[in-house]
Amino acid sequence: MDAEGYRLTLPAGSIIFTEGQVGDCAYIINEGEIGLSTQVNNCSVQFIVARTGDLIGEMALIDDGTRLATAKVLRDVELLVIPKDFIKRVFTEADPTMVLLVKLALERYRNMRIRLEQFSRGDDTEKADTICATTAALLKHQTRPPPRDWTTSASCRQPSTSVSSSSSTSPSLIWRLIASPAARR
Image 1 (cartoon, rainbow, N blue to C red):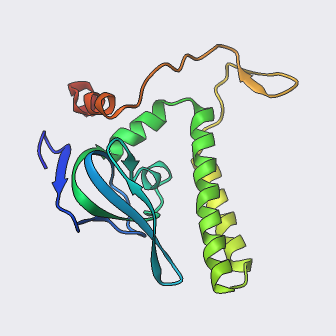
Image 2: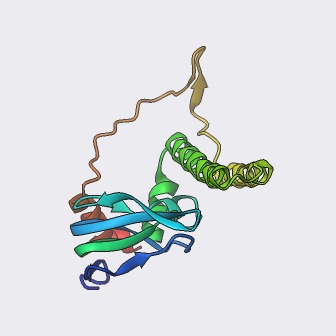
């Protein structure tokens, strides 16, 4: 790794992370290709090839869960490493509604994976329901309430002030944010 620990180069065949590991960072692919695979009935199934500009490994950082896939380098890669504390800081400063929506989507994805795995094995889904309920309870505990300046309309809850969303999440912007002295505070 170089650039003060934020760039990583790996040859083809390298394993970046494995399914079930605790995540400590995410990665943006600056160059190369990575295959993402998951275990289904003890078989490895590659479900996507991530390429230049793609973000991988972020899900485990968002909800403090484990890695949902194994990432294997298919073609030599150069990665931008995004530390967990950076992701946590972004989520701490983000709009609570957006944080909730992302966490709900991730919870539903994790629950779907549990149910599909059990279904494909022909297992009883009662255990999956218990695991899904436990995940939902943990998520509820981790989320923050909406800000006090929210008002309720007849159709939905809306913020009383408008929020502009013109920022880009390109790899170069994220690199500048992470590498800046302010980001290391």
